[in-house]
Amino acid sequence: MNSSHLLIKARNLTKKFGNLTAVDHVDFEVFKNECVGFLGPNGAGKTTTVRMVYCFLPLTEGELSVANMNVSNQQRNIKKMIGVAPQEDNLDPDFTVLKNLLVYARYFDISKAEASARAKQLLSFFQLEEKQDVLITHLSTGMKRRLILARALINEPQLLLLDEPTAGLDPQNRHIVWDKIRSLKKRGVTIILTTHYMEEATALCDRTFIMDRGRIIENGPPAELIRKHVGEDVLEVNNNEKVIKLLTKEFSDADFEVFGERIHVFTKKPHGVFELFLKKFPRNNVSIRNANLEDVFLKLTGRRLRD
Ligand SMILES: Nc1ncnc2c1ncn2[C@@H]1O[C@H](COP(=O)(O)OP(=O)(O)OP(=O)(O)O)[C@@H](O)[C@H]1O
Ligand SMILES: [Mg+2]
Image (tube, rainbow, N blue to C red; front, side, top):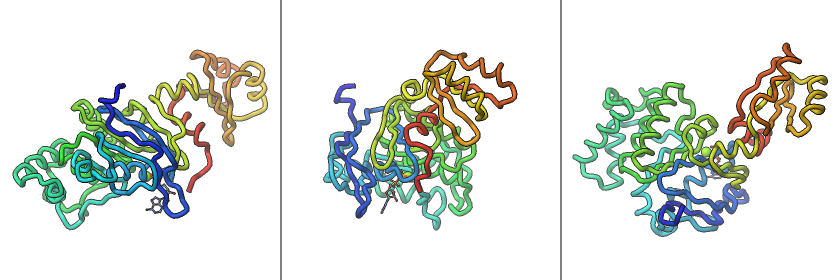
């Protein structure tokens, strides 16, 4: 893509909190109308990165521009074009649903009439119209999340930053949110989202950045990353010596990892090469499935807990 499509450019982007380097000299670009995902274990630096993009946190080092504007000195203009759904719930509990939207609209100098029209339309878009006069404390988790998304859109942003937009949501809510994200993308909005749900990143993102310990360790379209790091099929089978023997004999080029009681085997060979295991180990709880982004994530970031 050429530079006229460039929306965000980060070079050497770094954020330190005291001795801790939360974001460690990262470079990335986001192009207009892309949906990009930031993935990474807890504490990887996703939220900190996103916060620097919306001028909430100053950089420690490096450069960051949004629509050719420098985050260090053009905050006002940048904030105007961005919608943010933060990771934490920061709705105002003293206000109703509708009032939360109207008060937020004031930060953007939107006229009262216009704010009211947009709020109504957004409440309908997120299926909250019946809740407009309800206090925040009376909303379910899903309703709060949808309201935070509605609020992020009140200034009709070109760029939407969604920090774990579906964390803790039931499948119904999650699918509504996915559907809304897709329709916003169709309207031309550029979207950055962070998520721990690999299925979500695969379903929505054109590209993903995988972060670990403050660095971007890999990036690319989900399907490409899967092909590159994992392959086609994954065999999961109960761990025993016979299985290991067959693996070393017949699948010397396959990667395998032992996770407690189970072995995961990854191959770049075409689909179907693991059928042999179904026949030989009918009682070994064998399953063969497509490789997915979670395999890539675990392969690149490991299995150790981070917090
Ligand atoms: N305001 C702060 N002051 C001190 N340390 C912070 C602050 N914000 C974040 N950190 C630390 O920076 C690191 C990165 O945090 P960040 O919230 O960006 O991670 P994350 O990838 O969003 O994680 P999660 O998946 O848990 O949301 C963590 O070690 C965190 O404890
Ligand atoms: Mg976070």
